[in-house]
Length: 606
Image (cartoon, rainbow, N blue to C red):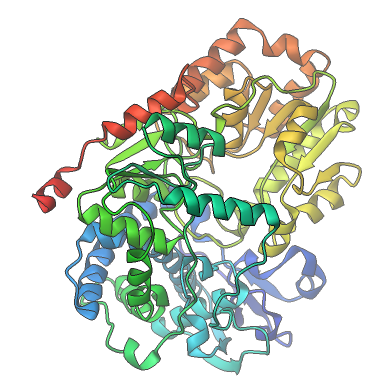
């Protein structure tokens, strides 16, 4: 962001949508569009206000920062590992702590950098005469685990922006007490076991009974992303008694503020942000890794799981489940192999995917949905979510189904997606432009599927935007399974680079994709395959082109979909990104049994 000429008017800085921190009696400066919620237009549209341009609207800068943050994360991880080992009196490897702490740390590093940079830009380019910072009880600002780290929460955002303002110490500030109910952390209390149904109790009894037939060195399969029946079949193919493992939840542990003073990540760096990040890791590291670490490791040791599994295979417990992460990390140190299955369609395709970096880094073998790259862990396998799903389940006389997703107003990790509230708004506006361009007779058959509950939680108000722009369009709140909607649709429209279109292309369901390539950047290896889809008019880079094509083929979707050029493009693309071999379970069995140990693990075990 280059320096720009602005008026000399001094403005009051507003950092979040918490209107208690606003001033209405003077000119104001909104730190970003996330302060101005769509449903609160009446509260801000008449203010004398400016908005700080979002730093990552410059996507070239975004790419450079993603690369920089990768290096910063590795340095921060190295220092955090040393500090954790010293604090707990352990000698765990970097890989152990990467498996356990890495999911939180890489997200937190990215979040901190975003908040720090926006405060810095506001200080650099505007005359600011004050801001308000909410004072939250210290114990209520520390998360129990990664699930509690809700970075899009307004109160937490206020806290993180406030800490950046305090560290940079360039903006006059006024402290105000947090209002009742504003603190972002729930009270630290024991979890109450949920009351289950009779069928759930029977499933639990069956799982406990079958768990008695575990072998010391069997392949541990848990949350594989396979349909349940296929997961059981895979275990039978491996010569094991099939089991459905479940990871327990731990009670949240309250922070011990006095003892936390002994946990300090070294910050002797010339980089001002790195010093801030190290201090914030020391302050904000979830209690499960510090105060609750002993309870965590005891819980992992007591699990009635294989004691020395040959391999551990999961596709979604590598984060958000610290009990599994602690157990797997310990078993990896004892020589077990960790096999991760791809989780999400952006992986292998997007230019930047921080979650992919982590998943591959902790794996002995990383099972992709068809692609490979230079990293030795990557292994072309199958699209796990499509195993044993029926193909061509669609209705030639059905409706037009458009699937979209709320995009967070505040970014939380580096990936080739829209980031920040400006790009979130552009994302939904593209979809509304698509619908507006459709022929009226086609638009009358349009259903927009969006997770309405998530939309409200994230305060993105995509549903409201749709209803304000095109009140006659039917909105599906995503309560019913997508499969039911797919069987009723004639054409499936996907608006973002993720899993859904890979599943429908793999199942030979007529699919149209469109999104802005400026936000959903592709890595060079993926570009030729998307070019094939573009030539077949499956993929479009503008909503208008996509809408024009939908209108053109609407009366004969099957005729277009079955054209040889379309089917050839679909098959070539799916072989790379949605692979489904004739015997997918055999492919998975072979991949699990032949996974090689990494050199660093072999050296540690020998």
